[in-house]
Amino acid sequence: MYRLASKIGLESLKRLAFDAIRAGLCGQNILRELTSSLTAKYPEILAMQLDVLHSNFASTFVEDGLPSLAKQISRGELLQGEQIILGICQRVRRDYYLAPEEPVSCEVEARTYTTPPPRMGVKKGNTRTFK
Image (cartoon, rainbow, N blue to C red; front, side, top):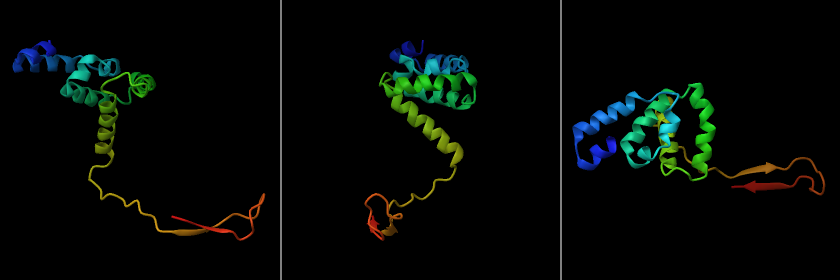
């Protein structure tokens, strides 16, 4: 119904279909629905399903099914695989890192380290500088 409503541009029917899809989602079926062709085609469906996944993340059904989802994504079997990973990461970041932080500089100052005691051909007191 959602596809038809989108195709013919009936926003009221599209909204009803969207709400019906949402009402039918739970921890038991969210991973299956997340991998559907409907989800791949409609970003708004994907976003809604990611919210449902996020709210059911502690479900044993989700926990048991995540390895299979990860395999499908890693094998490139899902057109929406990248968006699923990014969507999960965004929701976790939103939950655990509420305020945006200043980016941490990746520049590391040069340090001199002394190698461990002589072993197997390493000269005593040998030092190296790492940058």
